[in-house]
Image: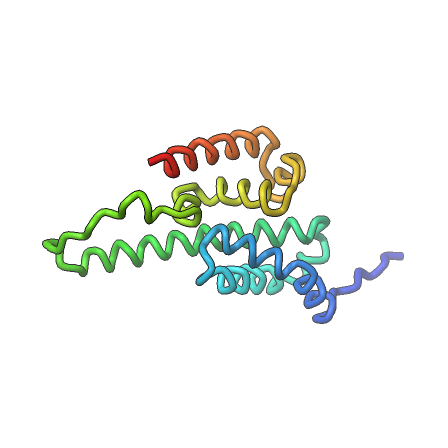
Length: 163
């Protein structure tokens, strides 16, 4: 006799989201900034929960949501980059824009120079205080990749902040 697998109810899905919503928003804030973080999380979570049948087979639901937010952040960054390029072409090319001075660089701008994966690793290491093995599991990459991305991120931050 085959046992029936219970489909998750809307309440189950909602409870899962509420349990880690604040963490996901903080994570997305590091990846895309505070103005777009909630939108990125909402879009990612809606995509995940639209496939509710697959959701029941996910062993690490928290990790799955973090990965979905990372993927949505990447998509958001690509869209934002295309929009900025379009807007840049529309602007008058003769207008000179002043270069930012070194004093205007802050931590948020320094983090924006990192790749999405580097920002994710930095966030999970320093804000969530996770060990490399756990970060690797969340991001579905090797532990060595986590360490390599963290080292590259630190080097990049040193260059930007020293400038």
